Length: 414
Image (tube, rainbow, N blue to C red; front, side):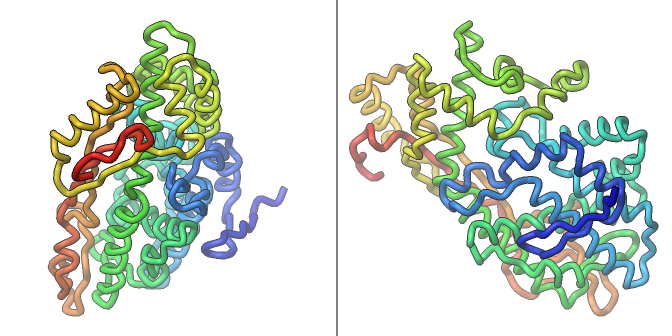
């Protein structure tokens, strides 16, 4: 069987599958599952084109890894065939631990289990199934491989993951501000002292990359309508779990049922293999099927919010730089109680407050190093002659309050 396939990618053109092992990994059910998980969660509620999957992204990141390694080899850095394949496998599998709707449900279906942790567990499982060929890729993924630049390419503030998802997400959303010169950035990468650096002439490309990331977060990933939809979805999952714990019947697929009828922690995955097996079977369709069923559930909270999600009757959201006025929140709560008979027990599902934050660049151990023309290594924030990067290092925090606008008449000041 010919395993050296070409895949036509809408962003990069033809993507090459270079080895039999990589083909075999792509064929695995745990990787094919990524076809059924959207890359951008519920962002398509705002940008209808954002329907691409984690499968697209993984293949694109693998392609950019090969371009990067070829560029570094052309500059005289030695990369063995085994390292080359391992780096491609590490980035190919870096997101295999994502659950349904990617980041949207990461902290509601599971309790404090990051997708990177599950990716590592699934890579270990796959390594055992295939007879142990992923040991080097596992080291690159968890940051223990001796040649540290490989680990940086897999996970850092200038990693292959970010180079692909910014280009891909801007392409599918149509948000041109997110477009970056990924191939130019790759050509500007070099290695000094076993660490990844950017040649000084690439500074402006890095500034554009960081600025594009900041814009994509606030204009796309943390768009207020996306936040509203995600909070509603988190709410229905939380309500389903609450009803199950009370002993009520809440229909769902067996895999989803396992994760909503109890709080699942990392210890559960480590002690009982059925959790990892169930997770492999879990994708966006499990959640949507459940939400459709829940529209007929006798519980008002579960049925009403599920139907709102399906029909895109999203909560109104107020996103501000300061916490919302307590008096305004009390006024909304009072109108929900009086106009719709919402009880105190139901209120947190129909009046949601919280905050979100983001920083485009964080100086520290995981910094972006610039190789100056004088041969010095400097943090990008210090090497740049523009103030933009220092400004982007500041963590921006925004506060939100969401409620069903069709149930509440306009409130003063909102």
